[in-house]
Length: 107
Length: 119
Image 1: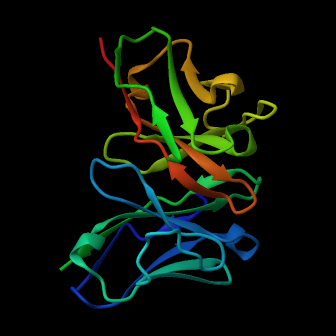
Image 2 (image 1 turned 180 degrees about the vertical axis):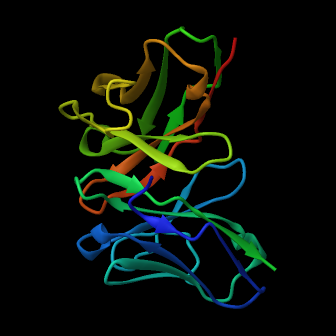
């Protein structure tokens, strides 16, 4: 089992705001990174560090953290944002760990 | 162009050995860790291990220690993932990705290598 916990599925109406969360004790010490994966494609980094977006990632994606919870927020969700989202960070042993993933449906 | 190019899909029988590759280009291959990530059919991402091509320092996930071997040849900017005896349960997509170690961020991904193990 993963030391980072994500809700398996979340839905959002087109154009609305959605928050996807990632919980784990290690997040009190380390930032989470967030990845978007569409069917049949490799994951793509969308947020890293405190709240950084790689080049080419729309500014509707943002990240935040509080206590043991990291969040990925999509403000004004678009149809193309429908995908699986994964967080990752370190576990209690310092190893890399991924969350179980959240399937985002845009209604 | 900065990229990681992975070797093609493989179909193997249980008990066979396999080595898949990941070639980096467009950046200093020896300056970044490379990680391997497994994704079983319909499942999530699992970290397998990482290697620093500069000195071949390697770290494994406890879940994969002893099950696979990660290596690299810095002279050709290529990392490898290998099995000595495949099992049907090794059937999965395998991604390599560049790791920014301090941030624990995989900022560049290969397209994946699909490994199918079936008798």
